[in-house]
Length: 406
Image 1: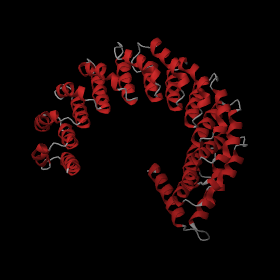
Image 2: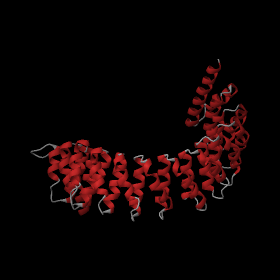
Image 3: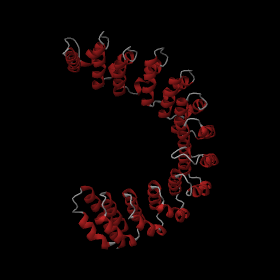
Image 4: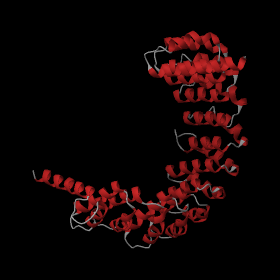
């Protein structure tokens, strides 16, 4: 009974704050005044009310509430600030960075990152130079959200931090600010003792598009070819995103890797780079023992759109895995071979998986064979609304083909 009363009083307090039922003030002023209550429950409800009221007048009081000794009050105040704060409040938040209160300072850093105001960059860079790892990590993340190149050199210095999380946040931020010149400093992290840091470094290097790192990524694949979905996988992925054609021989070689994740990543990398010459090497992967590799091979062949892969994809329409069958149907539609019409029509009505009729309907429209009209009309009367929509879309594509042929 006592607990129920406490909950009832708290909710009642919140209702009073929201409607401004005090004798002398509006709801915002009532809530601001309640932030000074001796009761933590009242202070928490006041901050919650301000989150709903979204008034700029509450910002100074909420900044003070970030110092509250009770975690729930600070959390509600931060939530309210997130709903209320604008770039007009950036100077106030920057001033908070000089506070000695840990909670207030960390919350201010988070809010500055959310606002992404370039005016906060110098102050956040100063936070990078403190000895407090948490300040460094939050500031690195905020600088990444802001995206200012001015933060590149200070962030590079953190790549040598002894703190794993700090290195992680720094390398991620460098990717977000597109600091291509930082690529040489990031390369050593490919061998970081933390797998998470190493993988993030690989992804960041891919996003920076600096071809100078190609040899380093190739070396990583050669040295880390045993662990599934480890740094070797991410290095192969990065090479594809990087798009340096000098990496093609290495990626083609990795199609035969004993590591299924590297085979899959290399397949997608070659398709992303649109290496049509790799098609004869990718086709055999449709029979790979790994479902993931077969799926990625079908997807890659659809991207490459080479007619040489049609026969193998037709066989894959009968793959034991439904996702591989669906992806094979999609690939056949992208390639656009009329040879696939009859097999796709058969799959649309005889495959046990619900996704196949949808994929087949769209693929038939992409191919553009008028003989597929009866099949699409039949699919338009399916009991599955997703299949009906796909068939209608397929019919639209078919009519476009007919219009272009006239």
